[in-house]
Amino acid sequence: MALAARTRWRSFLLHGSIATTALGLGLMSWFIAKPLATRIHQTIPGERLTVTATPGIDISLDADSSVTVSNAEPPQIELLRGNAYFDAKGQGAGKLQLKVGTTYIRDIGTRFSVRKSANGGTVAVANGQVEILVESGTYLIGAHEGADFDGVRVTGQRMIADADVAPWKPGL
Image (cartoon, rainbow, N blue to C red):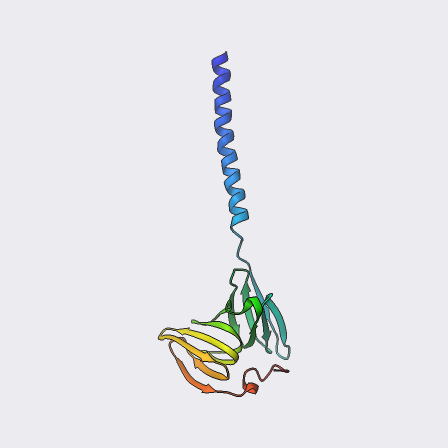
């Protein structure tokens, strides 16, 4: 009789410890791994919108534009269509990485705008610098400069006026 009770007790301890370990691992993975969430911000024709992606990054969308922003650190941002103006300040400076088609744009403490087109896009820098990463390499675009990109190369790097950075955004 004592042997049967001891065997049941050992079986209970074994199964209980397995269940407790599984529950503990599940809870640890829940608290450690923050689930990735993506928000989409978009405007309709005739509407403009300014959103705060993070406490240091503001995004202003022109009419008929859309952008996605993830809750990752640093945030993953993708311009899906239209025009967007990015203002990275304070803690957001240097943390903004933007995807436009197959091109990646990384800010270096700056304010800039991006226009997406069917073949790539255009970047215009108000102040600071951005790096454009395309198939042929990395290009540095500085303050008061603009450039076109197509995913393979950057072309048409030129000097621009402040009014050309985001002509649709008042107060720049």
